[in-house]
Image (cartoon, rainbow, N blue to C red; front, side):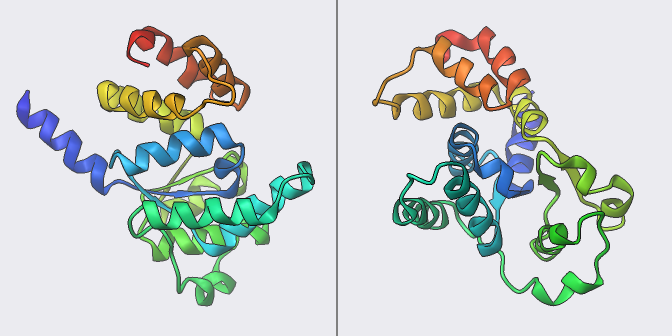
Length: 200
C-alpha cells in the first residue's frame, strides 16, 4: 500500500496541466486549482496570452473591476506556482490546425510545456484525434478535479479547507462553499466533496 501511495504522490507532482483561460475565470475555480498546484497535487502551466485572455474576460463581464488588481493576481500566480509560465511557443502556432485558429496558442504552449493535459471548458475546440499525436489529453475542470480528489482525498480536502478559510468577506459555510463551486460549473466535484464535509 505504501508503494502505491508513493507512486501516486510522485506521479501527481509530475503530472502537468495547461490551464486554459476559462479555468482561471471564474474565481472559485481558479482559487481551488491554484491551491492544489501550490500543494504539489499537479504541475500547473499557463502563458502570458492565457493571462491576458482571462483578465480581458473579467473586464468585459465586470467592467467595474480594476485591471491593476487583476494583474496583481496574475503576478501572484506566477510567483507562487513554480515554473508555471511557458514561453517560446509562438513559432509553432502557424503549424497547428484546430477548429478555432484562435486556440492554437493554447495547444502550442501545451506542446512546448510538455503538458499531459489541457484543462478547458471548450472540449470541442481541442479534438482528441489532434491532441493524440502530441500525447496530450483534454479534460473539463470538473473532471480534472474529481480525478485528483479520487487520487488523494485527504490532500485535496486540505487544499479546499485553506481556500475556504481565506473567504472572510463574507465567510462561507461548507455548504455555501460547495454551492459556490457548483455554481461555477464544478457540479460533480462539489457533489463528491459532500462526503468529506467534516474535513473542509
